[in-house]
Image 1 (cartoon, helix red, strand yellow):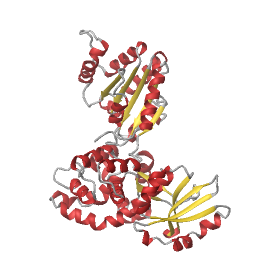
Image 2 (image 1 turned 45 degrees about the horizontal axis):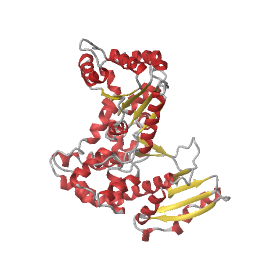
Image 3 (image 1 turned 60 degrees about the horizontal axis):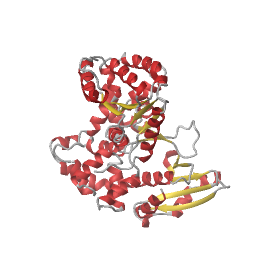
Image 4 (image 1 turned 135 degrees about the vertical axis):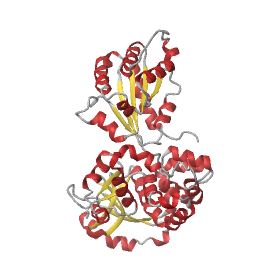
Amino acid sequence: MKFYNRNAEIVQLQSLSGMAYNGRSTMTLLVGRRRIGKTELLKQCFKSDPNFLYFFISRKNDELLCEEYIEDIANKFDIPSWAKINKFIGFFEFILQQSINRPLTVVFDEFQDIKYIDESIFTSMQNLWDKYKNKCKIHLIVCGSIYSIMCKLFENSKEPLFGRADTKINLKPLKISTLQEILIDEQQYSPQNLLTLYTIIGGVPRYLDLLHMHKAWNLEAMLHCILQDNSFFINEGKDVLIEELGKEYKVYFSILSLIARGKSSRSAIESVLQISTGGYIERLDSEYAIIKKIKPIFAKENSRTQKYYIQDNFLNFWFRYIYRHQSAIEIGNYNYVIDVISSDFTTYSGKFLEFMIRELLANSGNYNNVGTYWERDNNNEIDIIACNDKEKILLLADVKLQAKKLNLELLQHKSRAIIDAHRNYEITFHGYSLDDVDSLINKD
């Protein structure tokens, strides 16, 4: 599959390299979940740059790693055959020295795995960076997929590399408009296929590439691609998260499974697990960035009215259907799981249509606040509220898969408290269905 739409990130990265080449060395922290396309972005970005060097940090000892690196760059730097560098930190200093006289963009991929070589390397790297930075012409890009470790290394004041990264890029899934473009290129576009793709896969490039290989762009084809012998997707939740979450991953997985099934409050989760989950939920939110806490729009900062959802669409799908039905999958009864998903999918995807339209409204540039609303005990739920405080405009929206099920009269009835609190705003009531997706994307 062709490379899609990372234009903003490419412009930013190339601009930073340009600054470095003109004598202003800089360090960039590039993070993002596994399979999000960090490595491919870097290779596409710098494929025409003769000063680009890429090094993958595999879990080898120092000497083997340095031997591999030196071999990769020997011709470019005309390194004499007797040169011997057998420590990673020695190689790092060698790169910095080389960049004094020639500009370089250098990537260390899976940077967090340096800890498996020697954790003291981080301190040594800090000392060397501070020593050489103002002498060099280097754009150093440190790239990693274990979000919590990478952020800790560069954002925790107790860590040696704290404050050394000048720029942080958190690579996100591809936008809805890009998913539409992919489906059009595959000659498989329809609003329903777009919603299905967004709901199950989201915008993760590696997963999209696998669907491309299998020509699986509708619900039936996607489910048979995902649920088959030796499928890449079956163990994907574990592959992505176990190393991140550590030895207590089973507790975290139980929490995530319940959130994916609609148990979105702490009290609902604890009523099932019968344990205190506050610390686990807080870490999933603030440290691992796997879940996100949401409050009703306009709620006070200290309000305890809040819910949680899994930020990654595929992981939500994985915990709701694949993790939950491991027994059937282990005995190869994929059709059972496919039938479960198929019978539930209309209800399940309806919530993701809300997420999709909320995201499109947020990306439109017309509003400064877009969210959802509910009152105590989930009363008077409103799917979407979009607010422009500067122009005093408020949009209140109902979302249904089918337009005939929209009920604006009920929406107005549920909105009484919002109306009372915004009497000086121009308030519009609107219904969105799957039929409206195309027009919203065109405005994105």
